[in-house]
Structure formats: structure tokens, C-alpha cells
Image (cartoon, rainbow, N blue to C red):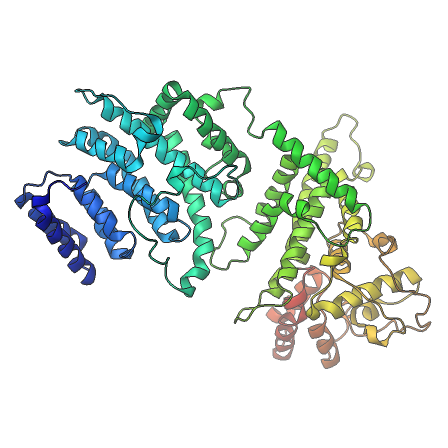
Length: 615
């Protein structure tokens, strides 16, 4: 690697200058000018491979700090270090350590996007082109992996190195992305275990404060890596370089394409990306191959068999969801957790994003709609169960998780059902028979939802309500029992009743709250109260005299005066419809000062925290 022993003092001076700039947080441009002057005075040929080795070795990993990366980037920009060699050295050093140093992987991807595409032509015209190519070959061990290039005076061997460089960098990113998403089927290749000879791991990216953010940064890195892969495949120059690999290295190309197809078909990160699609990861020769299928039949069949086995078990007494089910619908768990991250604000409605995910998984897994809905509800239930005993912290997440389960998930199901029924209505309007709306049949998705909710009641293990909503769940169960009993009671009693006042102990769970949410959104009706097992306690012990006229949201809508007693009831009871909230909002806008104060108090009460059916 070293150019000569007589120049050791030059490189010692380079290291001292770099340490000084690092310590004083010096301007990278000033550092590059001083460094160029020193290297020119020592007759070092630029761009210098030795400088690339020295700088990368200095960073990895004892000096992995922002200023050293800025200095490295400046050395590439002013062409005193060969860009392709720096990228080759970084790929060997950073990719194997990307989980320990996610910020370094992010910086590497940024440098790759900035300099790999623009440096290909300039590298070929570099005065020490051959030396640089030999160094790239050694850094990535290209000859060891693909065989020697053969000597050529016209630079043909160097051209082969450039082709292999591009191919290897893309393949590294594909394999790294597969491994990070748990999709790699074999042991990582040599480049995933080779640190490039740059020493230890340096202890990672900081302490516990930074380690808490690593997971999010790693997911972002995977997305950026996939974007970079797509760019290499679509770029005019690099796509032609990859086509040379296809024609001249068929064995390596076949293995590469197999992994690329696996990433395109199965990547959860890719499915959530807006500007990169699975098709954009496919080289042009694959896109034009009519026999190519993005999802292999074998993979789809396996998933279908696994899902059928799970649903066969669900027909019996299922106490909890098993590992196979969790694996099939894991993408929903991941997207729900991502949505809980307050650091990211999505441009698209999360209901639409999650709706798209459910429809995609239904297609991928080859399932029925009731299976897809069941997967969605179970993922949302798992989210709540993970927060049953909230960890210490200033911002508890349980209320947000319950909103995900009882509001967002319900809206997703409603969106999917309304999509189908909207299409049916449009077809009926344009039908030659001109069927009336009264005669239009409901879509199959609504019926599938009923089947799903009935099966969901068997998953007792994940339906236990958190302590904070146990009384609400019990109230929902008691409401169903009163309805089934045939007692004529007013909405006021149903809204404000205390289950402790009833002679029978009604034990509800999250299933009852889910059903109530679906009834509120008019996805199902109250016939759900008659489903087997929905009302478990006897309802013939209910008192015969149940008051009909109590302060409630219903009485407020009908015109009851806004008395202190009514305000107290409305503060403690969430609204059951959006119309009720809207009427109160009118008080907040146009009422008297006393009415405005009451309206604010009510709107910030139970309807804000537990108004799942109107949120």
C-alpha cells in the first residue's frame, strides 16, 4: 500500500495536519489546500491512492466523527484522493460494520451517490489510472472473486475493474439490504465479513442515547441503499456497465439477479417507499422477459399453505396467535410501529398507506379478505399488548395504541369496504338494467369482515384489555347483554350505566370494543350481539326497571339544556357520533361565555381520549 519507505515522513505530516484540522474543526477547504501543497512539494502524484488508504484508515474506527468525514469528502471533491478507491475502501470497511456504525453506513451511501456516478469517466482519464485500478482491485479483492484480468497496455484490464467495481458495489448493497431485513438465505459473502484491514470496531456510534435511535437509522439506511440500487440500475452509464456483466459473467449474474428478485419481491422497506417500486429494481432485460414473475410461484404457494394451516387452527379453540401467523402479517406490525414514531410526519394519510399494505399482503399471500382483515386486527392487538405495561417515560403510548386499534384500523377496514361498494354502485349506475340502489347487494368484503370478527373472538390471549379500558370493555359487554335481553332502555342509560350497579358481572374484552367500533362506523349492525359467545354472562338477571331518561349525549342532541349535571356526564362519556361533536363545536364557536367554557371542558374530556368511534 505504501508508496515508498522514504516518504514516511510525508505521510506522518499528512496525519498530523489531519489531526490538527480534526481537533480545531478546521475548514475542510483550507485543509485540502494545505494538504495539496504538502503533497505537491513531496512530488506525490495526485490523486494519491496512499492518501485514500491513510484517510480511511484514520476514520475507521478511532476517529469516526463528522469532521473527519467532511475532510474525506473534500479530498474526493478536489481530486487529491481517487473517488472510486475511497468508495472501495469504505465499502470493505463500513458495510460489514453497518449495524454497529449506522451513521457511517449512511455517510458511505451519501458519498456513493455523490461521487460514484460522476467519477467513472474522470477516473479513466486520470494520469495514474492504472495504479488506481490496481488499488481498487486489491481493496475489493476483485481478482480473487472473479479471476485475474490479464495484462493490457491500452487499459483494458482497468476497464474490467470498473465493470467489476460497479457490479460488486451494487451486489454488496443488495445483499446488505437482504440481510438487514432477514431475507438472506445463505451466509454472507466475503465482503460482509471483511473489514478491509482497518482494525477494530471502535465501540459503535456513541452511548445509550444514540443506541436508542439506531433502529430507526438502520431502517432509513436500508431504504437509502435500495434507492441507490435502483439508481445504479436505471442510470444510463451504469446500466450499460451491468449489461456487460450479464453478457460476460453469466454465473455471477444469475446469482445476483436471484437475490435482486428476492429483494424486489419480499422487501418490506421497499413496499413503503414512494419513489422506488419493485419493478424499478429489475434490469431492463428482466423487465422485457415475459416469463419473469416478480413473486415466484413456489414462494406464494408456501405462504398459502402456511396461511391455510393457521386458519384451520383458527376454526377451533384458538387461545393466541402462533409464530406462522405472525410471520405472514409481520409487515403490518412494522408499519404500525413506524407510525408510532413521532419523529416522522407522513405526507400521505396513514389510513391510505395501511390500506395499501393490507391489499398488497392479501395479494402476496393469496388469502381471502377475512384472513387479511384478521391479520390486520391481530397486528393492531399485538401493538396494544406490547404497551400493556408502559415503559417509563414522559409520553405514554397506550392511548395512541388503542387509537390505532379502535380508530385507525377500523377506518382502514371501512376504506377497503367502501372502495369495493363504490365500484359496485358505479357499475350498477351504468348497468343496462339500471338496478336501483335499494336492490344493490353489499360487497363481499363486508361479509368477510363479519366472518373475521367472529373468528377474532377466539384469540382470547391477545384480547385482554389494559387496565385503563377494562371498565369500558365491561360496559360494552353489558350493553350487548341488555340489548339481547330485550329490555327497552334509552340511549342515556346505555351511555352512562355503571356495570357495578348490575346484578351480573359482565366481563368484556378488546373484542367487544372492536365490534362496537365497527358498529359505530356502520360496518356491521347490532346483530353482532347475537353471535355465539359474544354475550357470555346470563342476561335474565337484569333488573326489570331500568330508567330511560338520563343525562346523556342523546338527550343533549335532542335539546336538553346544558346543565352542570349534563356537562359532567358528557365530560366522562365519549361521544358516539360525529354529529354530537359538531353540535358541541357550535357552542364553542357561537355560544355564551359559560357555554364556551362548558364546550371546551367537554371536548377535552373523554371524547378526546377515548372517542375512538368519532376520531
